[in-house]
Length: 102
Image (cartoon, rainbow, N blue to C red):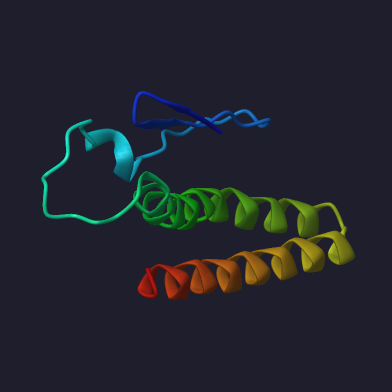
């Protein structure tokens, strides 16, 4: 992930066939004066939401592969992917909880 002119530019190792909606795309470089938030605080708030959105965009694809794994008789693989989805959902809950404390 790179930071460039108040925008977060994400580089992923995987190929995506979908678009990401980034909450930070609307950020503009000037201050509104009444905020005491540091740049890092603002960035962290944005990233917490981005991580949740990013994880959610992958969930559908993961579920598709659970079904494909089952179709080829790979039950243990399917079960592990499902467990990974559960962990990802738990991670999202933790990101959301973290955002509440910002």
